[in-house]
Length: 451
Image 1 (tube, rainbow, N blue to C red):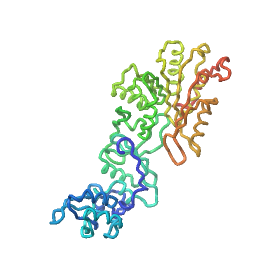
Image 2 (cartoon, rainbow, N blue to C red):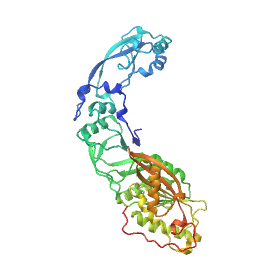
Image 3 (cartoon, helix red, strand yellow):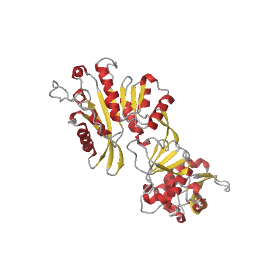
Image 4 (cartoon, one colour):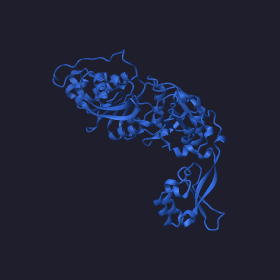
């Protein structure tokens, strides 16, 4: 799907369309559109217009499918027939190449070998898809362009080293072939763990990084070169948003430009959204305003994740216990932590976060945490569970409600979502067995890894 996310496995393309591209283009590094011209003989069925619909239903697997080419055309130079259907020359060369059962079906619409002729046509660059071109041009036997993301008018690639010498051609072809594409960028390094963005190089089109994206019935605008946005996560955003109900509370610890926070506030949840990246913070507030989010439902912060948990989240819980914050009696509190490279390391700040023992019996909050992580290995579910337990610093096995595979990052790494119930025993740092003991007064460790 062009809008949102495109994932194209070009290595699995049909050999049909590749073989129609001239061999001369193999290894081309600078795009020469003229070299894609080729004249080929194509089998054609001549028939009357009233027989076309039925004939098409019979020969559908054998129709010639190319870009900017109509497989059914008017026929003006024949007194008997007024339509022609172009067939795939790599599947059909002569009448007997058509299976017997298909030929018998043709007879019911008065089509026989007498209707079958050959005709010369000229193919051009405009007739080939970008899949056809990449398969024909790029090195045979090597990994090719395996997938890319579409963010507004920008196509984002992550080219392997052996494809870098073809990058200009790849970018130009994508601008040519995808109507909504004006800019093609290639990722130059891994995501920066502090601000969740990466360096990129424009390899074709305009150097314009300002994009508008629609997701979860909201419009998001941002500078793609300075913030993090992954269209592959749109389904995950929707999954979480569906669990939220009006009057619920959302603390989004690493909110980015607001894919969780803005739609949640639009649903009339109270949202506390935080991101350390000042550009993300800027566009977060822009998107809240752009989507007409009322300030009564939305507060934003430009803090480190540790400070957001240990100050903003903590104060809210204390105020709830003291009745200084009033929430709906059936409301739940949700915490989203979508920084998969580091988020689990921030779980330790929940363990013993509250140190006022007098508030323990006044705590009656239902809190659910969604923490995301990368789980490398053969058993990502168990690996994700262990990461959560190790980082929160206590056995929370019974409180892990679900472990869900969000997406495959590489052949050996999965992005996982762990759903954890955050109890008052965790927050006050006491054991389930002995809630009468005073809680451990743990302070946030200043040397922790920064968001």
